[in-house]
Length: 212
DNA sequence: GACCAGGCACATC
DNA sequence: GATGTGCATGGT
Image 1 (cartoon, rainbow, N blue to C red):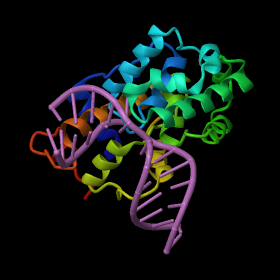
Image 2: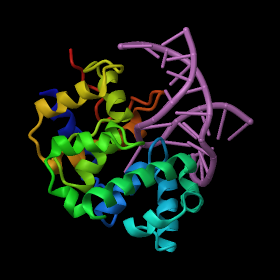
Image 3: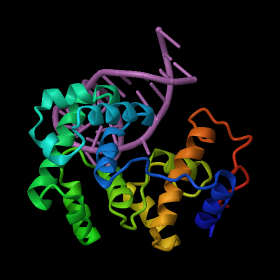
Image 4: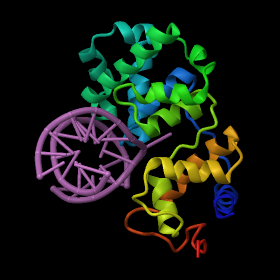
């Protein structure tokens, strides 16, 4: 099918993307919140600051005043909002899993996803990024690039909701975490290179792909 | 100086 | 249920 074809085409064109950039499941979860509507290079600065302050762990972050946390993550933008969101996630991790991502990893995917979505500041994409990239759960992550690429090629309307986009990938692909990992990363890559709002389709590896 | 970036919650209609 | 708005930094 076309979903598999697109993956093969992108993988051949770009090769493996080796996501998620991060040293630990905890760092990946923090990065998932920090990167909301934000360029990754800004997130890297914020994470570097957290490491410099030796604050990239649940216990330290839990005790850190929120104003202090906001100032540390400033380069990531929306720092007041994100400080609150990080605090909410840490609270969940401390209260339910004794501060350990390993404990979270033991959970069944579906109920865990529901619980993540109930945390303030964690929506579908952030929850799924944490599930796939930090916890090795076979959940496909949908983002603005995924929607842009599929809608550009007439595969699905841009305004269709998150769940329907995700359902398409879950139907068409084996539940393979390596495949899901690479595919999402490849969407981001090709989205940045060739699927911007101001179209740059001439050299796009998917330019002859059409659902019709 | 405008535009964009690996979203989400909340207000309003 | 759909649509609009605030949040903010750093790179191009």
